[in-house]
Length: 247
Image 1 (cartoon, rainbow, N blue to C red):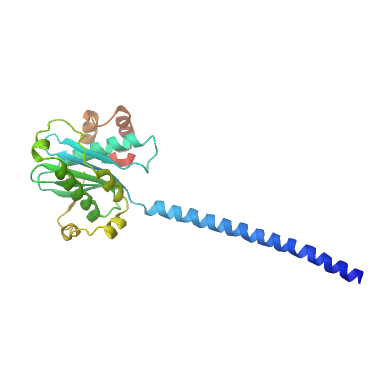
Image 2: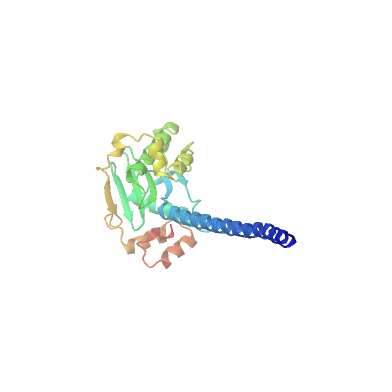
């Protein structure tokens, strides 16, 4: 009886320990699996994320006069953000300079697109996105930006501008951030049918606008939009026609 009791006690004391080890091992494997899934989901999110970088409003003319600028550069490294803003302004201004009144154009270069609309009254707006961003949603932001600007600033005011301005448009930055996820915009905002129809949007490249490597180099050297650091970065690029590489 003592032997049986001793064996019984031994079994009672060792089995829970083994069960605890097995439970801990399973919990560890479960944590590892969750960690792998989380990392995979984050990686997929980075691959599928689309960027809307800036919305800038100009007075059209030689040269275009900046009226309003808003940027969304939170996804870039801290030390990149200044150059990203400067290059976005440089690209946007030159796309407007190469456009004419009435144009509604998406100018594509490598991984980025400048969506520009120049109104007949000379008000121009450029939204800079990556190449994956839907054209329809980009021009929805263009339309909202122009409408918000018109509600705040009379035509007589901005048409008299001869030098760059930093006018304020309430809510414009929030609109820019909201458009960061175009699927959310499609879900929350009923985009007008005339914006859904993008057949009248011309898709061009920098070459179509006659912006060659040599001209881009000359424009960058003369540009007041670019700091010495940004100009040096562009000169170090393998091709000056890839000015958006910094983005």
